[in-house]
Amino acid sequence: MGSKGLIFLILLLIASSEAQEWAGTDEKAEDLIKEINPDYEPWLSPIWEPPSGEIESLLFSVQAALGALLIGYILGYYRAKHARNA
Amino acid sequence: MHIMEGFIPPEWCILWYALTIPVLILGSLRLKKLLNTEHSKSMLAVAAGFIFVLSALKIPSVTGSCSHPTGTGVAVILFGPSITAVLSFIVLLYQALLLAHGGISTLGANTFSMGIVGPLCGWVVYRLFKKFSFKASIFFAAAVADIMTYVTTSLQLALAFPAFEGFEGIMFSFIRFLGIFAITQVPLAIIEAFLALTLVSYIFKYVGVGEGELWAQKA
Image (cartoon, rainbow over all chains, first blue to last red; front, side):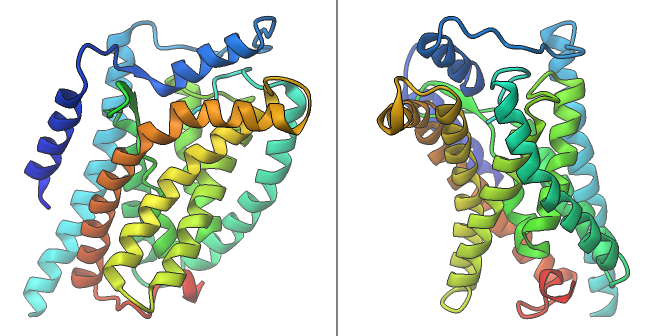
């Protein structure tokens, strides 16, 4: 199954359910905590939060890019080495 | 699966830290020994890279909400559970400090689910299935590591927030949290399993390690 298949699968997942909020499960769990225990106050809040949604998605992209770079660089190295030795 | 900063009471945070820290110490020791073996540094980077990529992707799912895979399957197949715990800890620390996903107080709890229980279950599946089918063992190890992470998060939240007193209250909450996490996760775990299978097969083919000589067993 190639990347095309994966993209198709993801599109299918989005298309299969209509008019959703597509919220994160972490936030949904947070809502459920508030429902079960309305008095609960988080006793600590994050030291630093990304100032906006854009900056948050930037940092997520950086995380993914770093990972992909590592994988691509190293696998490329071994692939070429394998080809030379073959 | 990130439990937000301050979202479970302090006593639970301490408990999950207490269970996680010994595994992280064990993992660091094994990591130190492992670094002397051939290919280990580059393969560690690939396994860590896989966790970085997959845990950054929030993918929409059948339930109408988004969640992310964990990517720990590849690391646990290559290096075993304790080293996977260290790699997960690094990713979770990055997300806690820079993305406000998870937090320092809940880092122990989140490492326990994503870095320990999930990968450990995947590891067991891998070892059990390996004799029968190479491909199936990798596929199911990755899927199980993913799903079990979210099952653990649900249990952690249910223990901290039982719907009412006693065991039944915990179970009631557990099922409700599972309703949020587990069903959403099934399609994502399948996607992750396909990716993990592709990557591990590639590694075995081009890096030149056979099925029988994994780093996890050498270290």
